Image (cartoon, rainbow, N blue to C red; front, side):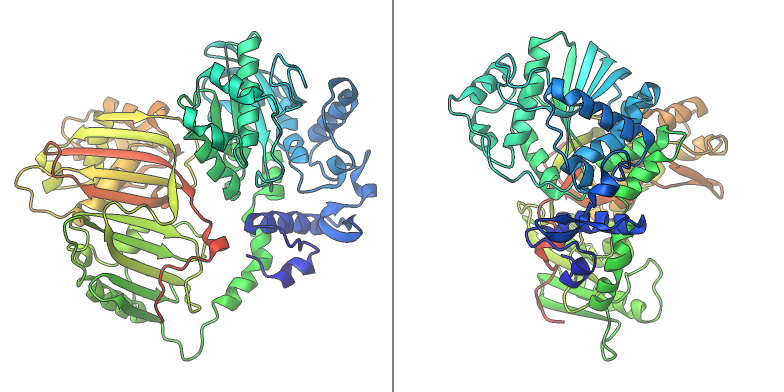
Length: 616
């Protein structure tokens, strides 16, 4: 949570705000200040996330970022008397936090440039061929019993041509909202009856769907299903868009998806990804303006960073690190001022030595796995496999990880003013992850690896095996996801004397690389195809490297020449959970992988959940 003094200094303190809402409100207040706009009023007091009417109402419209956004919102207001669209004024003008201005700021330029809209939305939904029209606050029939009988509407409605003919996206946009409030009434039980007609919901999920926080998602989805069933559409889906940081929405979306027997007509995406798609598609800078207005963490970090600095101030008598064992033989904890690098020096060299020595005392019994967590409120992207295993020295964990291991990233504050925390604990193999749960699937893999891949594991060879194996992409994207999880199961070949911890890095690098498309220079890379495998031709190497159809983790500069060989650079710094297990019961040489979006269980910044509980 952000300190009250910081929020008060920018007229952004509201006692009921959760951590994300605090950050979003402060962001809008700082944006307003940066543009020289005075704070508005709410319930008789200054509120930094509001504008004064003189700055906000037509013709000024300071809440809107581009001429296209201003044109579209004024057009929607003019049409609202006829359409019945609930465009509430003055909120539409003065409220910087409202998701309605966000809709116009993001989709307004797309509504006026349908070619750009097509290019942008195709990156998110490849089945879109041509965008015909974008409407705001649109419903096929408010209050009509032909649809849901209520006054629900889509924040944004995209009319397009798709693979199955005329298609639509009905989009609900959330920014600071947490899906709380008052549930809609349904005295005659109409909504469960509609749900039963469409046959896409688990029957036992209805009680959850009828309650908050899922009810609004459900009602909007029902409106999309009724629109698809009653009108002339070949396909359609309801989409929930919310910021990555709004964990109330992203967690609710993941819960909602589990209520479905068929999720063809439902999707949930982050605003961050859509803005990034617009940045890639647009020749102009307006997507950067939207990103700065709503999502760029630097704005809030500029005033919150001093708080973090105060929390991380190290006492003069505090050492560079501490290692202790709150449960000898079962739990090891280490804390440091500086993150442990691959080649530590001075005090960090001693930290690695002491932490590795303590970890060597961990020996997993049957039914146990190693559960390791890296904890820091430093939001820099890091490779948790490196921080927790490779930089420590994998040999220190060979006995602890003999059956399997789970690596997790936590963004909580380490205890006792430390900046970085490591925790290694033996836990039940059946224990759930501690900080994240599985969201939408991205890819799956099932392959039979020859013994030489285990005897001489290299990232490039595992990449080729994955590409030639039963690799299935459940989605496509041009953009690497911001947080994802990887599950691996490994059944070693007969006679293998290695350890899972020693196989981990090349296996993970190879499998994750197989889920990318290479977007960098390629000719000098192709020259080294034979170094991966003598059977790999230049043409096959080119096709496997660049095919976007099997790249659910998006495009990156994946591989670069390195001496006479190649160096692989997958976006594995987006992995927040790595779960790898040995499975001796399966056929020898079998390797499976499941990759999915990761959804935070409880935002550590909210809960303040520390890695350890011992004293330092």
